[in-house]
View 1 (cartoon, helix red, strand yellow):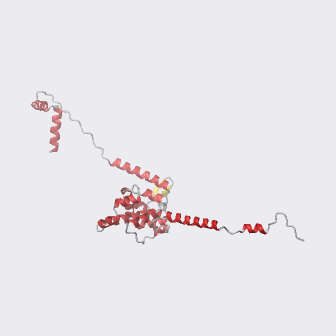
View 2 (cartoon, rainbow, N blue to C red):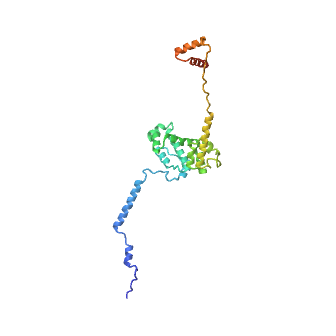
Length: 267
């Protein structure tokens, strides 16, 4: 006597359908898709790998002893890796631009290097910066060097705050290296302790003070006195002589006298 199958119970046939092998056509379609994906990845990959891409921004900045590239392509790759969101990378940007300036402008190798690698102008075009912009970064590095990089790492100083110091109204060495304290509404702080808004407040105050000192130092020049000479005796020989000379030169007697006095004072 055969047992009756309960309603809804799976049959052997249904199990067979769920574990059925993929048809040959489906397998070939999936293989083709994987091949296409790999082709797209290969096409999208940069033509030249960036050896610095694997380094994190802070890690890259800490490697001060690392030998910097000596060719234009290497310098551009290094520069393009720098992420200015990180303060240490901002300083590293100053460092690589100062290095590039030395490589391009070295008196002994300048001509040969630029002939082989390209001009300084070409380099600036490649990194998308103007000469004045690059000069500010170079000056910043030349003044502070590795010392400011160490400070930035120790104090966790942000790039936006460092950028404010590029246009600091007074010598930034006093603010950054000597850690001068500035008085604001909330108290006295060094630039490391301030927020970006507080830095801007101090900059505004220093600029106003600078403008005022220029105004105070500007000497007030007295207005030239007007010379008026009056002869009570119109028959005075001197008056008659001046009057005649004034008529000959188309001038007033007063002007003749003023010219004579100026000549006398010069001698």
